[in-house]
Amino acid sequence: MNTQTEAQTTNPYSRTIAASKRARWDLDKDVLRGRSLEPAHKCLPDGLSLAQSLEFLSEEQRRFWSQVQGRSYANIFGLVERYIVGKVLEVSRDYLFSDQVALEALVRFSDEELKHQELFRRVEVIAAQGMPPGYRFVPDPNEVARAVLTKSTWAVLGLTCHIELFTQAHYKRSIETDDALSPLFKDVFLFHWKEESQHAVLDELEWRREDAKLSSAQRSAAVDDLIALVVAVDGILRVQSVADADYFIAQVGRTFNDQERARIHDTMLRAYRYQYIGSGIEMTNFPELLFGMVSEADAARIQTALGPLL
Image (cartoon, rainbow, N blue to C red; front, top):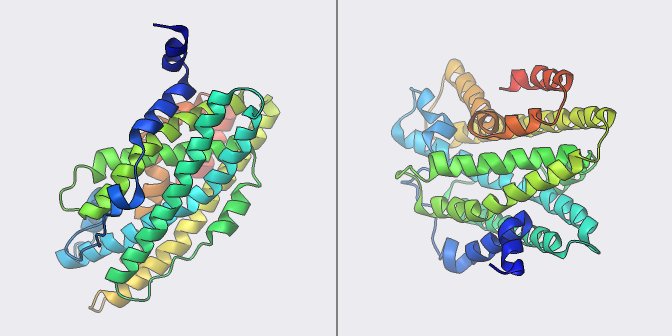
């Protein structure tokens, strides 16, 4: 093995570049292919949507429940990728006049995330064509990105690592294996997963690099930022879950009593908290990464602050 080939094999940035080249896909030719979302198909599996916990819904109503959630699922990923691009471009500046391999890896990361944003914008258009009017996606992606990017780099990279790890877990454990899901929706997240796999590697590399720069006091302050970011994510989920529950109730074609309406709202929020917070704790090695960096006192603070959300 020559020196260049050996470097490409052992350098993790080189490996992500090679994987990125292999996984590269085209939005129209490979993913969308002129297809639509069909009413007969679910968009999210029951394990993520919690549809089966609402025993008073029919199967058709549970399918619509999953379609409402699936539409917001795509929109929320489009939202988080807005701030991710900003942060990745920022950290890539560290390599402008040094490690050009790392720079290429991060530039590819940014380019792919921009493509993912376009993908999810297109999914929203397709969903709007196949679903009744009245759906609202409440958060503004630019406002959210601006707020996130005011926090420390350590906290933003930690949140990003969490998101991209649970994205992979959702696809491999739930979406890929559910034959009742929309073929288009499955393909959207298959191709999304192919590129996110490299992104999660880069997230961890850059998070650890940032962590090595911090003193104990700086890390504790960064932990405060991470807690604040997760609480802010929960705030977004609260607002969107209300909008989605109200839309579902208005469009499903039947009347619910007060108890059923309350359960619809509660289950929508529980599903969203599991999808975007709890599953990353339960399904991935994120806790191992996080608690391997912070002190016992900071770990206890994290568990106390986030416990109610789980």
